[in-house]
View (cartoon, rainbow, N blue to C red):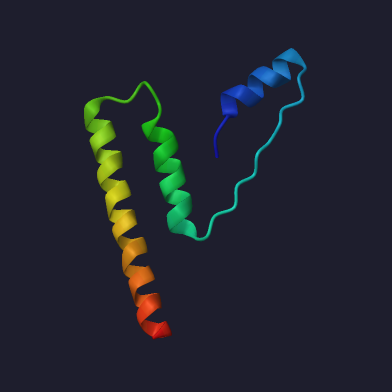
Length: 75
């Protein structure tokens, strides 16, 4: 998902890159990870940050809804 430029620099310098493969509980957690990584970028303007934060909030609401439904089914 990330690190295209780091990989290219490693290839140019003859360094073997190290890959970190992440596994997620479901696609919502994967999306949250991607959004969090993008929020940490320094080149985002305020509008872009707010847009990502709102998207993150809607994903967290969906996770909460699914967890709530799951808890109801167990009881």
